[in-house]
Image (tube, rainbow, N blue to C red; front, side, top):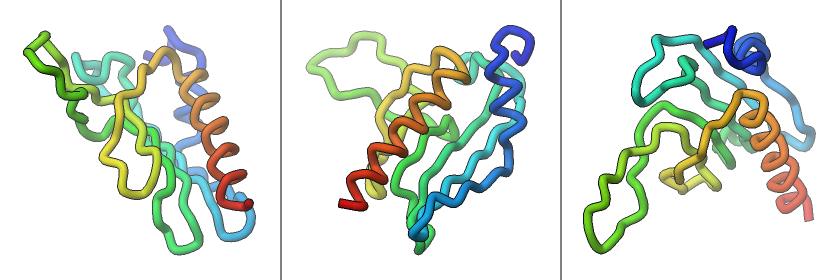
Length: 121
């Protein structure tokens, strides 16, 4: 909850913000406080996304839905990951280990820098 992770306050303040990245690229931040649950233990529902000029999501970090764990040969008590990232427009999502809201923001913006550097080459 907000008192336990000071970065959550920052994340909540960014809700609804859109950041122009130049050349038609833009970032959208959505973050809402929700009841903490097994799947959302930090009590924040979020979506951080990078889009191109056509609105196509190029990168996204969110916890709006579960993603399947990587397939293994036998059952090992896997749990579905809700915190995840989409690495490109067709990516269904891979697990992301949420440690703090501050780290989430750092990881997302570092990834944005990497993606934008690649597409601008």
